[in-house]
Image 1: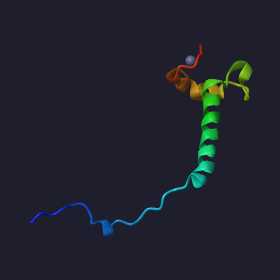
Image 2: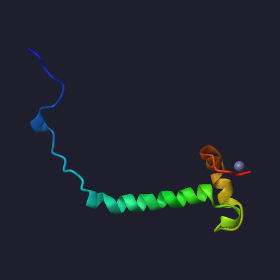
Image 3: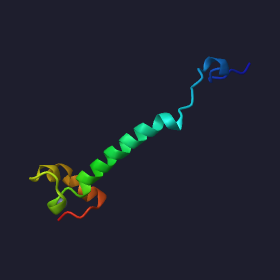
Image 4: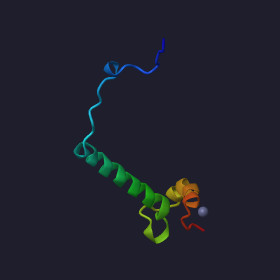
Length: 72
Ligand SMILES: [Zn+2]
C-alpha cells in the first residue's frame, strides 16, 4: 500500500491571485523608499548634502564602500 505525505488537493485552500492593480501602489512606495535610501547612501555628501553635519555620512559609510560609491 503506497502512501503519500503530500496533502490531497481538496485539503489545500485556494489562494486568490494578487492583481497588479493591488500591488502597484506598494511597489511605487517601496521604490520611492529605495530611491531615498540610495540617495542617502550614495549622494548625501558635500555639495549634494541635504542635512548639515557628518551624522548621515557616518551612518551609511560602510554601505558606501560596500556598494562602490566614491567616498574618500
Ligand atoms: Zn569612506
